[in-house]
Amino acid sequence: MDNRTLLVLAFLWQRTDESHTATIADIAEYLTEHGIPKPDARTIRKDIAQLVDFGIDIVSVRGVQNQYHVASRHFDMPELRLLIDAVQSSRFITTRKSKALIDKLSVFASPYQNDLMRSGFYVDSRFKADNESIYITVDRIEAVIEAHKKITFQYFDYAPDKQKVLRHGGQIYTVSPYALLWNNDAYYMIGYYDRREKVSTFRVDRITQLEILDEAATERPTDFDVSEYFTKEFSMLNGKESRVELLCENELMGNIIDRFGENVETELYDMMHFKVTVAVELSNNFYGWVFASGGKIKILSPDDAITEFRELMEQNKA
Image (cartoon, rainbow, N blue to C red; front, side, top):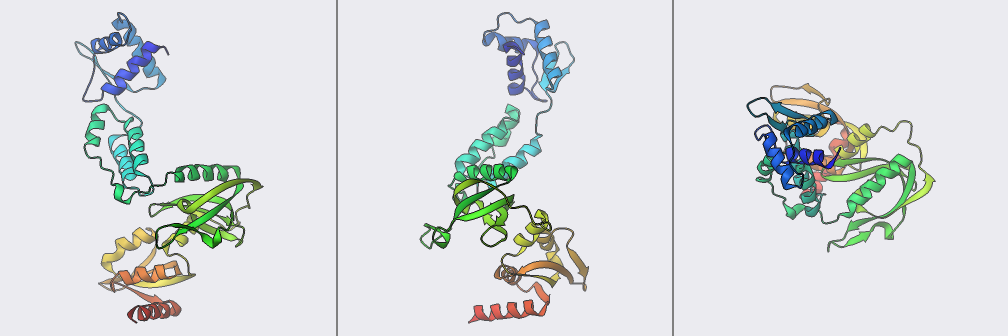
């Protein structure tokens, strides 16, 4: 494909869509402006045919002068809008990276669609992360998962003065990564943690000083399932696993499905309530979620969950 054909592609890609077409004369003028002397109509039509053979969706509308435009691109307008909205709203993507990603996504729109989309762009920097090293960390972990190797790293928390403090005095963690998951606007790495001899979860943006080892990764436990682990780990964190039965007001069905999925086990209770049975970790996160319902969710069983919830409520009153 020669330079002239690429210029024809650039013109059609950058300046045409279904509502903005171009004639052979328009293309010829563009080519002349870019140093192609006296491009004739027959040659340009051959260039367009070659682009079509190459896979570019160029439509010709017959008329006194045929009108040409790029009909379809990699993404439809609603798809691009969805992707751009996700980038804009994601907190772990920095402001600078958000704008760079939006610029790259915009290439897949026609220039006229691009102007329309950009009219509503706004990247709220108030809640954006400021650490761009997470992208490098994610990329390295993905490579390690593919290579089935172990990694070492340090893990940090934040002190009350917002300073980073290495957990356990700078302890070195040795982990065999199994998967990366995105939940509640944060990336998590799931892997086998040698020290505890169990599958554990780590926030990627809290990982520092990551090193890749030559040592082969510990094989996944035969009963380990990423999807099941994700559901249990991120429904209610850090407690004893238990099946609980909840009594919920009917208006909360959407909230229950949002948290536990459409396959959650439910049954009608009366005209105002339904019951739901779910496996959760009995933790402050779970009890706090029940409390936040303002009495619209009640724990029916097991007894230890009811007792722990009451004790926690009493402590908060004290």
